[in-house]
Length: 377
Ligand code: DHB
Image (cartoon, rainbow, N blue to C red; front, top):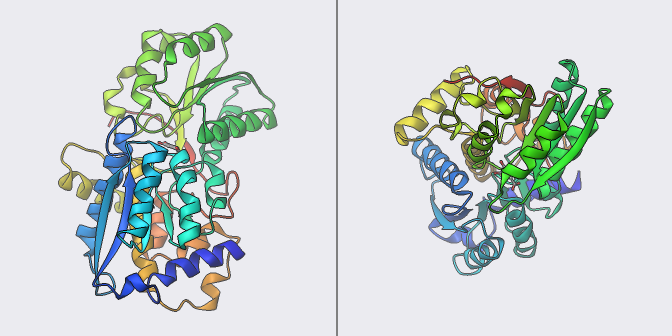
């Protein structure tokens, strides 16, 4: 499709004409929440970007790549100002990161105006890739895990559920697609509860969920908020109420999971990544990540950041794509595959269960995330 070609063209322009390319150093703006409520997202992606560069060098085309990391603290206005500075003053050839949907949406018009490729490594509302033809995304979209969870619920005899989501783009996506999936499977969602993105208080909504006595509580909160939700879930005794806790993988984020306590055992979530995935590719990734960051375990944000760098390097190296490469807009996985070098593409697709995102994706794709039961590891 047209959009896909513009993206490919934008990424390819990195390797050719842009005046910035004449510079000795190729600067990439990395805008992340390194402080504030979403800081785990920033730290995970930053660590993964560094790991990728440590493993693959910083001169993919012979010129040095320099990452200009900027902390937006999760605030869209700050992120917008930082993006403007990076584009105008620092003359970056691409911008990357974007920890939250409102940040990605605030910056997308700048990417369009300046014709700067924008690699979204975290924000996960479906609409983001339509906000600018210069956006590519290596993270998920929430309809994918939400629909997978609804299917799991239907397959496991769950007929009634309550949803609890963060009240903004990805939460609404999750709520919409989980509810649709439940109805399609012959069940129902009896209450749709929402919590504010900033400083959420889960106690009142958890009480309402408990009072509604559904068979399952389905939740989405952004990465980093799962531990607080888990704590209050246990404190209110919901883990012993007989209500099944199911969620998107954002809730049982690997960065926080081991600190969440026994209340999270047997919680079922769907997502595109688990640090416990037994593939050789993943074992190597997790081991290398831990060596470089001894106090951390990689989560899905880290993988999306790593993938974003892989995409960037591949685009920089690829000056002249074969026509066939840019002519496969309908298949998300194949569409992205050409950006990935050699056989690793196949391995990584297996690792991520085919959730590789594409601008043409709306809603859940084939072979998307699977429901998994949480176990301590
Ligand atoms: C978004 C942020 C997250 O941390 C997450 O896990 C999912 C989505 C977002 O703002 O789009």
